[in-house]
Length: 360
Image (cartoon, rainbow, N blue to C red):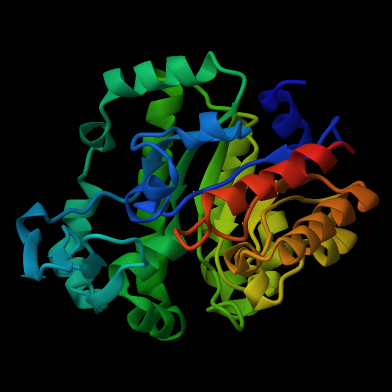
């Protein structure tokens, strides 16, 4: 079976000849660590490690105020940029890491309505897509035997990115009309964007949507709040994908277990990445949901970072063989992304364990 056939079967909750294989890698991994271990700049990790999936596009809600873009502050080590949503983020220049949220301009319904809403609604998504380039990338990708996805952020991630966590969490409860208005327009722009790609570039094999619903201890919102404020928009966008017979992979960091029933109801076919440090265990989840979901990830990055081959073997084979024993649809990968703290040799060992034990 080809990679495309294997992933299609797994997302359909069927069991093909082997477990699937995917991975993501922190930016700058080559420059910071792997370059010194023999990995050349520009290496295509999908090709080198023979991964089954590849994403060929990325969508996030276009910022409506390019006049706000500027460098707020800068040093030799880091930079603070303000984007066209008026949000400021601090990022390292020479190493990977999650950006620090510094400040946000969209901090009230009044500011949203008076300074951002109309400009956002007026955006033509066509102005933010190079269709000729997208067609070339699409043609090359679809000629391969990999499973090809379009990817993007959706409403919960956009709320966090544009409003900031504090304003978002308070407003989910105190300003629901504002949040519904915001999510309605973000959903509209997503549908406009993906409809443009579907019609003028081509259909992918599936979608990979990013929604960081949780942190280490719990989801950010209660199940009741999620069902009222977020689920309707998941159903709308994911329903649009289903009209095109496209399976959906949804990424979430943190512990999102209380939302899994809603995620299934929304039409998601696969959940990723199931961070082990939050208490999520893919084998336990599969015992409950293997007939309703495919699972991607959950190999504890801390075991890989340890460099201890026994710990790595126990973690990798415990999850891999556990999923095989359940006959559960599974795509093997880390529980987030591979950081520079994991050596090339230890990642190759993780791959070796997969190759020797991936058959169902």
